Image 1: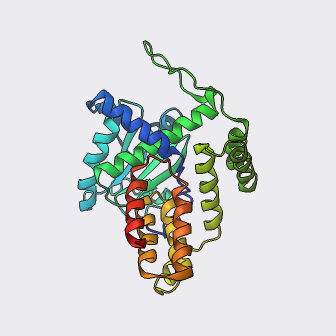
Image 2: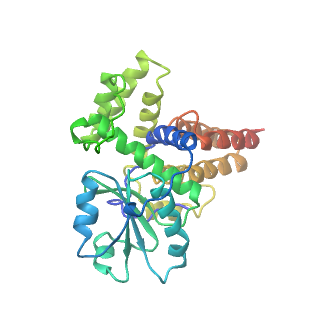
Length: 312
């Protein structure tokens, strides 16, 4: 279940558009077969080595930070999964393991409230993460979304891409990005969500079927709806089952944290127990969240079936 008390400085909006790259990455992995985990992809980190092993390395490769404790049963479950899925990337990401009992200053600096906590560090910043034990499939999905977002960063900043190792070749560049799509991404980076929304709308006016624009517009709308949300107030309001707006806002917050299935299930539960205008409001809200995902996302197919069952 999503934890709405997570510190916003560490758990920003998930780049839901990266799920498109995540699905493509999953397909490539299945086509190439299993890969052996490499020990070079896993490193134990202390307070003395944190800067070199995490911050410095994150300038060229995403670092998955596993904050664990031998006293936490969840750590024993999650850490082997992280080693496996990061190792499967063949060095395109690094797993940095921090024993918070031995290195408490790292946990304090990152405002870690519970273990296990997993953070993704890229370009010196914590960009996303989670605080619960997830099954391997969900960890792989989260990691694929991260790698998709990293690839988007390099597409927008080609000079920042690290040079390939000897004997390797970079993949050929794709077609140039649409100028409105570039404008939208630049507006998001500068914090101008209104300009980003306008750019996505321009692109959709010219190309109504453009999936990147559809997903981008839905994602910007999601962020704007939750911009002033008080997580503690949302939790309090959820105690009133008649507060439909609280349920929808809680679903939005879960969506931003990457808990997509949880967000969908919450709204579908509202559809099941309501009628009339309330039911229609919940249904339309759910369809808006659907737009934030690529059409082939497996969570969409499952949610559409559940919605149809709830309605009929």
